[in-house]
Length: 184
Image 1 (cartoon, rainbow, N blue to C red):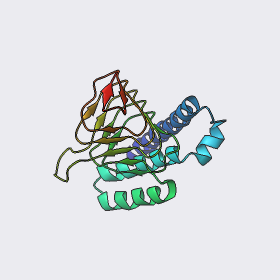
Image 2 (image 1 turned 135 degrees about the vertical axis):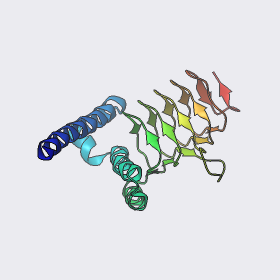
Image 3 (image 1 turned 120 degrees about the vertical axis):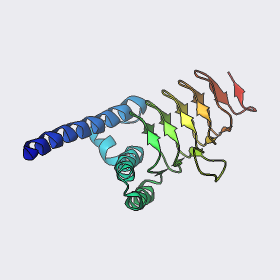
Image 4 (image 1 turned 45 degrees about the vertical axis):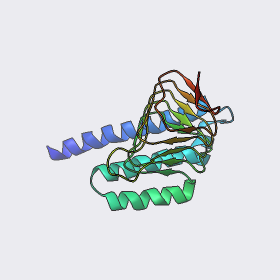
């Protein structure tokens, strides 16, 4: 009986894994106008590679292999230039365009259909224990160089322009501009 269960479990696991990989590649093709085909994205997109590496490290983190998760995530950071803490929680269809310099902290929560550009930080403002990184809603775009800091909430559908430092929660469906945190 257990052999049948294992085969069934593995079949479902691999089906979900391949579906997730295809979904990530399709997301890159949809969001990046310079992406030409599935093979190119699969082989050359560091943002995709970092997300896949994060998912493995996050699994290790959840099953209490935290040292191994940190070692693996550090290797992924060295290869891609993107640091995603294995304790972070990231939704589906998350896309990092270009990616170099992206940092996502341990208690960050990122929703579905989020796109971020290079040099974005989802960081902390304190070294106290507990939730200290941002919560980002669904369908959010965060521009190059933006810093989203602290235990704040970024609502669904928010657009954060490049090089903005955000330290206060942002309501849904707004745009954050660099002119003194002006919300449109």
